[in-house]
Image (tube, rainbow over all chains, first blue to last red; front, side, top):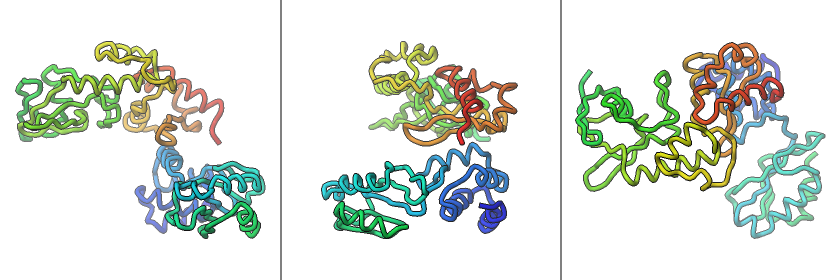
Length: 150
Length: 196
């Protein structure tokens, strides 16, 4: 992400130090991660020390300090999904992608995460990919769904 | 500034309205144990050891004295069976992180805390924030800060700033209530093996 683009985002929120989280969210959404260079630019522009940015960027799970894959795969591990076989779905995803929750594969295709509840327990087991819900998944269906995301 | 009178451990205390309970107690020579308080720094209230009781007649309210400002007519107890029990447990939890800390051991003796009560997780950090706050508020260098949260929270130096500022300063080392070498270790780690 270029410094010009970061400046645009910073200016959009008025350049006040209190807008730090909004700025970071925008960079995260656009770039899919927060690079050290972009954080340094934000620090310079918003006059917020790097320690504070580091604290916030590591505090929230929404922020990532390493590159994320093109597709974010969130597997629901809530109680309802768990009893309906979320573990088997997760095993399938781990097997297909070769990564564990919290990791990204080498092609930057998928990032796998577990979440605790997506709020649609009737559809369990649920997997959310790029914001789209896939409900009542069997391991075989999971493989089919995953294939459609390049 | 208006004056406020309150009672601490049966003593009448006169304080100004911007004082905290800890300041007021100190002004009449009553010692309240604390690990995260420093006179040059803003109150932080992280160690919870300075918890005291406010006598509300029929019930007692627990407040953290280093961040609670004085109020007219308060009745404060700084020692009681309940407070000793709370401080003992807090100390035992801290001792799981820093079992050999001299400052903690001294307090542990006073409150009868058992350093082996909880399984050891020797991180040496009790998140008092003294080094972080001193660097930000007094030195204004922001070389050290917290990262992560909850049980994984720890201190971390910014290598670019630390390599320039820290070797000639090191003023945060002696502030550490558990182990002065902890900050030294994290500092060397930051310089030698910087996080990407």
